[in-house]
Amino acid sequence: MENRVQALIGAQWGDEGKGRVVDALAREVDVVVRYQGGANAGHTVIVGGRKHVFHLLPSGMLYPNRTCVIGNGVVLDPEQLISEIKGLDPAPSVTGVRLVVSNGAHIVMPYHKKLDVLSEAARKSRGAAGAIGTTGRGIGPCYVDKYNRIGIRAEDIVAPKLLEKKLRASVEEKNLILERIYGEPPINFDELFEKALSWGSFIEPYLGDSTFEIASAIKDGKKILFEGAQGTLLDVDHGTYPYVTSSSCVAGGVCTGGAVGPCRVDRVIGVAKAYCTRVGEGPFPTEDLKETGEFLRKNGAEFGVTTGRPRRCGWLDIVALNYAVMVNGLDVIALTKLDVLSGLGELKVCSSYETDGAVTDRFPNSAQALESARPIYETLPSWDEDISECRKFEDLPAAARSYVKFIEEACGVKIGLIGVGPDREDTIFRDF
Ligand code: IMP
Image 1 (spheres, rainbow, N blue to C red):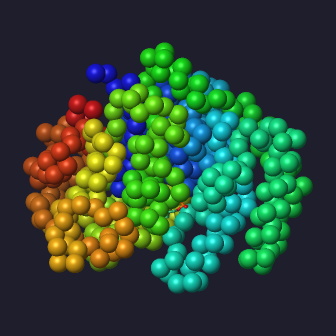
Image 2 (image 1 turned 120 degrees about the vertical axis):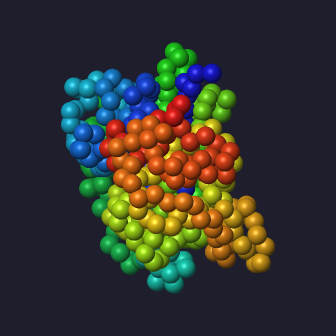
Image 3 (image 1 turned 45 degrees about the vertical axis):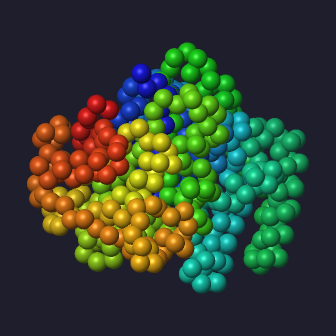
């Protein structure tokens, strides 16, 4: 069966290198859709040595004549979007890229970002255990308004009368919170209203009905890629709650945030790094606080694209990866950054946990249970060779091949793509 409609999902705690895999797939697809999250994401694509970072725009923006969609499930920071559109070089008018922004995407307002930072600081002051380590991009507070049915949607910022009514009510409420709970100065409604209208006039040409856009692309037999942000273990339902983001990062989120029926998705691709990283707080069983963690951070350049924070690093966790395989129904895995493991010496992989004296290969759906999970490792042969020039699986050293095969067997899923370096070309394709 041809894979016309595909979903690409982070299989760990985000930062798996999804941008480069989307970029590789975008060669063959007509439409790329972001369906959840917002500018908390940071997707890096390196083309010809030049680095492109997108927080909101779909990674497919770099290919000519594509349609890129920001779906209704995304929370949209207009200032970020406008700066990314303006920064595109060459511009979409030259490349023929069409951008469609859903009317129904919720707008991240400056007060969302402010409240995100303030509530995070308050949680921190109540003790480190309460802090989540958010990116401060207003994601949680914006989704709160969405689900509280008081959010401002993209369609509202091009409708001045409606905007005035909705924004005034929102600002009144937020000012009470800012002043009375946090002792902060209030937001000036008039200034924000003017700003919102100016965002609206910039974004208006891109606004559209993403639901019909996607439905007609499917009907026309177009190839569509749903580009996930963050990762399975940060999903608001299936991740390590409460140390999660506020959106549905798993494959199921494609249906609601991207407006597509589940049976229309032909293939679900999971992206996993050859080791694990996490930013922010929360349990991370295989985290290594010593030399290995340092080696991975340095060699893998593991610093947040959005916040610049150093990422926590550790060994590959097969228990967690198998959970992602299950929750998303992964059909294939793209394994990124295999090259980072070159020269690491002994290679370990966590294949089960010990929790309260019992051994389990089930990933617990509870941050508390995961806190007490002790990883049980298997040691695998390592390699020292630089593998960044390898373009075929057979080119890899035997130990690297057996590392890949070990993961495939442990997860029961084929690894169809292997990243061996940061550039677009540094990729091994195996029936992908
Ligand atoms: P928020 O999404 O900013 O609310 O942050 C919630 C948690 O998700 C924090 O631990 C963040 O570090 C993490 N997070 C959010 N976006 C990303 C991402 O794109 N990559 C990795 N972690 C992320």
